[in-house]
Image (cartoon, rainbow, N blue to C red; front, side):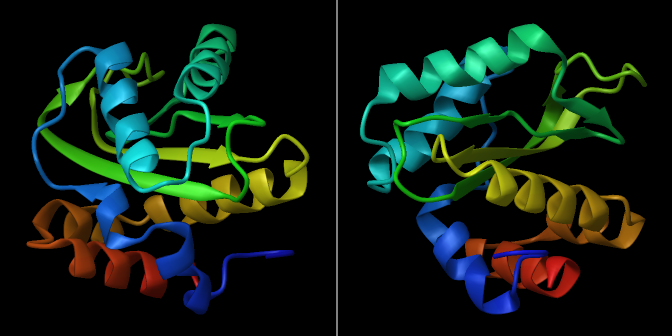
Amino acid sequence: MTDAIAADDIEELIPANHISLSEPPAEKEACIESLLDLLVDGGRVEDRERALDALLERESETTTGVGMGIGIPHAKTSAVSRPSLAFVRSEEGVDFGSMDDEPATLIFMILVPEAGGEEHLNILSSLSRALMHDDVRDRLHEAEDEATVQDVLREAIA
């Protein structure tokens, strides 16, 4: 992953067990923890507390609510050994403090190894570019299963 995410990388980056189509907790920190637990349960996080600390520290620096109903909590941490992405969607929305004051209904978590600065930026920018499109956001809201979420991301990002 040098400049962008390749289509073949989607299943590695966000396997089906890192996707939840169930309503997440309505409070931001609890939502972050539920996304983190997807990565912990998927065997991607070696130290949950260290990962959570990195995520919350990043949240304290500036909002990860990017607007248009999107939240992307993210961090670089030694608690993971490879880049990982998790996703949850919310009917009610979670307040990520976005500049447009809209709650996040599509929430992605990005965790990358401490030394993965370039990968971190590539994943964040590729995901952000894809989510700028109304049709991508609509398809993620309408996805009926995890495989469909992966398909939408594969088509939109790659």
